[in-house]
Image (cartoon, rainbow, N blue to C red; front, side):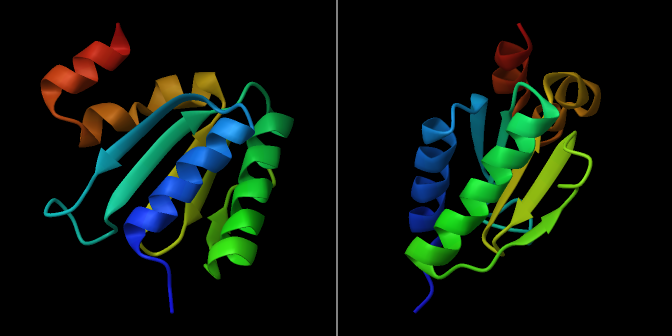
Length: 117
């Protein structure tokens, strides 16, 4: 049995917290898109930190919940995408996150404005 998207989200958020990810934002995508139920965006302090957060997250999801993840961008360490099928996680270096501003695309205007200040 595969873990629910809510269970995946809970474990993802705790894993990111354990690994000292910064500025963690979760976005509920249900009813907005077919790409997944949730999106999580966070930052790592360096390329190495971004890669480490991503590696540990994928390993925890696999061993604890039996969830196989698709991972892209790990080689460069600027922006890693982890896709569980139900939850999409973006781990950025701060400069790259500021450039792409994914929160603005997916969050309601008021909430996105609050994050930018």
